[in-house]
Image (cartoon, rainbow, N blue to C red; front, side):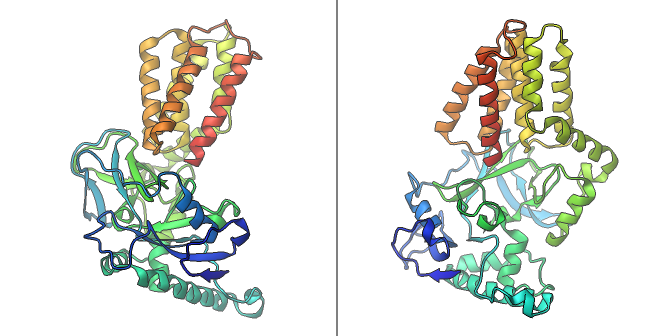
Length: 415
């Protein structure tokens, strides 16, 4: 993997082997944070991704801000610093948007011999790679303004004893995987992923019952966090560092490299929590919910409990476990909106539809996409309104609805 200077060239997929040091959004060399208070990010990205960033429509846009500031950084008992709500925050509300201090590949490739693990002991080979990664990242670090360097090094480092250099250690401890278009599309999976380290957002502590969802907005080149449920004043604002539907012991093992041991209510009662999360994962996987509601809506012999009570029960499980960040939460809200539409319950349909829209907003959906969501939602609910026994399982309306739900689920997974 070669490193290229920050040049104004257009790159394409044939240049995927090249990495660029680049400042985004671009600023003049003598620019200060007083001149540009939204800040900028020092990046190591593939040459084609740099071109994608610069060609993003509307780039670079302004960072979004909450109407009223909603957070502060303060001591969190037993966890060092954390983020706390300075007022009540409602579900779907933006809490903070921030540009990263540094963005780098999650699996930074450095110039070491391809057969290094064949010719050297494993531990020695790992140390050589970490050394080269530190050197490559130091170039980006030295490009930062002094204020950003200070903020970067003030973050917690849980990798001081494993051979990681200080920059690598801070990134491994505090880096968030960036979602959406901020990845090398020609390298699917972890090899094409990027991580970002932030001044304030990297202070968010983990909870297996997180109250925020985070998303990366390419237009403003900023990470945004939204409340997924109401957050009370003085309540800690939390995120997640691991997959939440895994068993408690597995989650705790995944958290160890961060120096974290979660003490949330679910981790404190693993016997009950693990059974709930296992059932949620099983009942909400693939297209089970869509299949259930389509079968119920076309078969009058199935009781209302087949779709309504089961949906309400699963939704309560998800809420009891604090899993509003999971895709199954929005799926269940849509499920219940459709069931109530089929039963002609206008008020309940509106309530669940409104809550479903709030989950889309909380995942950073841009305004034009929100409009598309509303139109799709209206079409789906119109199909189901008072439909009990009127539709057939193989009807075009049902098939079209199932296709839209699958498409929206895939979108939700990629947000």
